[in-house]
Length: 473
Image (cartoon, rainbow, N blue to C red; front, side, top):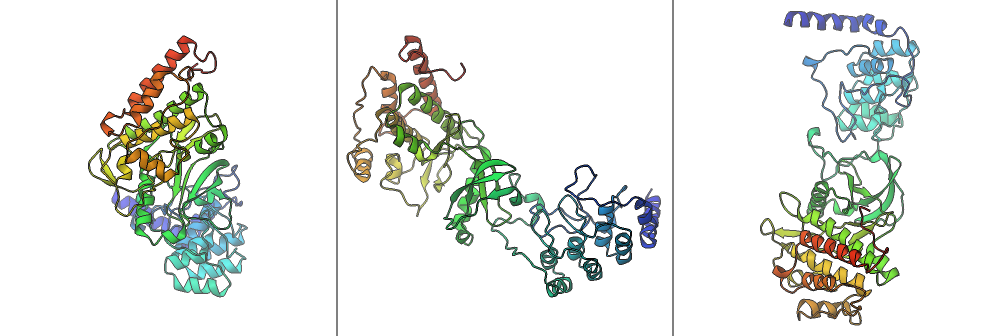
């Protein structure tokens, strides 16, 4: 068997050198491009790949190389350019094939010859009016590819002919092995981000990804040299990748192998709960219950993540978003850096600033103590109070004073809303959620059970008539 394989390889090699193999496959030449779906077109993967390709498929070893069957004319041209066959390339071009033919990745013969360092092929292609600044799907040019692979002669020749080489700085998350590229990696060319001046650190912009509106968080370039910022970015991605739930903002993907680095998530057009409450004030009992169930379900998903629960640590209306159907979705988790003590216990990492005016923060966080998932139940209690009362606890005082009253002096504001409007069980739930002692606070799985029970009781007793509808009806 090995003898037959060797004879076949030698035969193919002789055919390539004499041009007979090429002529057999070139009987009907026509231009092939990735933009024409009616024509069979292939991805070129026999040699070095684009310098900007985040996957950068490994080239096939020459010893194991086998010439594929039924090459179309574009692939023939790219293949011969890869092998440095000047005469073969010239014959194809003379027979009518377009010098700027491209494969599925937008790669031309000039890209391939530049990657492989075949100067004579490059000269020939340019003499045949090849586009010197043609860009592949990742935005790379032949000049950039020649520079990346250290083909100095080709690079200098292209530069002398006026070629432009786009900047190709590596990101802090660039991987050496293509197999290590994360599954969530997105092609930046598929993102249409609206450019604007003064992009701030961690800014969010509305963009389009394959025609769909998405929210894009852009990591500012100044943070690329900061290891802590990069680690925080990686940590956020790790958490986002784990979570899939209707009440948690959906993670679409990220750009980590190209600059700028970005996190892409679903676009929610109606803004956040903070703006909604500021506009609406006190919510109706039915809406408050519906919203509280949405939040509780999303938080329960985070807390039940395996193998380790995700503690939000910054649950507040600003981090709760509304979709077009009025459904609430939790976001903003993973942004506060934590020092893990055990599976279920953590502490805010040293050096992480604690906002003294954050009324939603639990006393354990404020006092820089070890805490567990119950800090999120405390925040939930504050949010539920705000939805029912229409104001924050101790709203007449400054935020710093209100935080000290609740976190240090263990005081709680009275619930002023009439009992006829809200059932006692709901008020009792608030009292338990913001209890000074973490052990007394309920879990979100328990909160969901209790909220569903309240909904069923109130609906049965006709408290709200048709103002509240169960989500499954």
